[in-house]
Image (cartoon, rainbow, N blue to C red; front, side, top):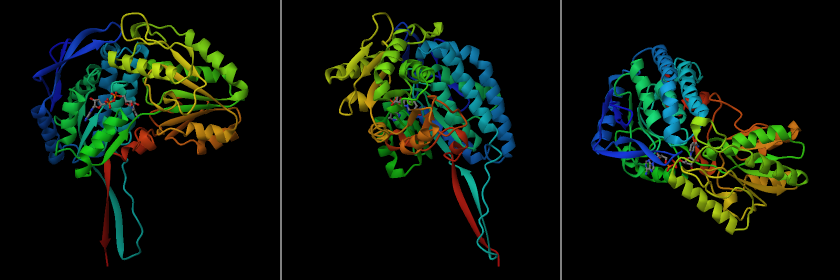
Length: 477
Ligand code: NAD
């Protein structure tokens, strides 16, 4: 790395320039403050070949797993040390709050600690076949894992896939998102400082349609881990179909909170604040829809309006409640979906426009009386926009909640836990939150069903996305 203005790719233990540079913008001002080198086909090939060589050398797998665990613990320590430098950088490139940026580094360190604790516990099974046989399973690493990261939580999401992949003994090539690549590159620095083998990790930059597509198409890749939009995930799946590559797909969402008339209002409003306005709503598992039982509907709409209008809008460095969107493109996209909602007859309760100030800010926006035929009910906005719909019966609530193509998360707010337990069965999603949106942690499995994708990240479950099961059956008599 030469300086903080101009950033390089990290390939097989070296920091290298590309031939092309991409500007990095500060979303709070709209100004360019850095540039990053984009990796071309030759750079990608070098990164993948180095990863292949690392796999072939056995450097990650010949050691005792406890040694890999020690390496991951060291990486976690380095990440914690780099957080002071990395968090303000992450604020500057993403617009998010400083607290959130610090949280990303802390979470990244926790992923490495968590999977360090599992590196020496990836145990196979012994399967009884009678006395004539001994049968057992190995879990073997996939080999070269290519990982594509989105811009909303770049440090957190990078570590989420990288830590279990390394814990299981894979080599990894990561592509950064084009508008928030910088803080993520510090994870390479942490791995380098900790002494990770050259080739076990490369982090390369560039546009998705060029660098990303070329990485995915490289014949030396054994597995794809993709976090991003449905359209890109589908394009990647099509492009790797001929090679039948194993993929983890963490895609979008349009998740609903189902609010019953016995819900605790303080818990609900705190969850709304975090659920849809945190990181300006640019969260795949955001509470972008709310379904409210009719007898408390007007009361909830009024309380959510007050909450949204009370949020302080400002730059991430001030830890404002409502920070800017990550890019001018994202601001245009949110505005267009909000205008469509207005045209289709959703009732605008508050907000509804880009803020009249420099940077990519958008007002906290709430629509009420949203019906399933409206696009705002179905389409992911990825902005601070909440769509509220009334319901009468439980059955109607489940049908509305499940009535999109997505199935990432869902939530239920109810004092009656019997009803909440019924909800946990009825809601079609990879995870269900009860009385707290985002309840869970790095320890709990995360992922989607339907168009939200497949495979699980986080928790013990994620580790098994990074290994093959091999069965060995031996005739012993
Ligand atoms: P995106 O699909 O545009 O980009 C994601 C990444 O894919 C970027 O690094 C991009 O450069 C790369 N990419 C783009 N085209 C590619 C191609 N053809 N081949 C290979 N790589 C390519 O998504 P985004 O706008 O960065 O992120 C927002 C989306 O991500 C939302 O839909 C959101 O819900 C989803 N997301 C999901 C999760 C999750 O865990 N489920 C987490 C965060 C974001």
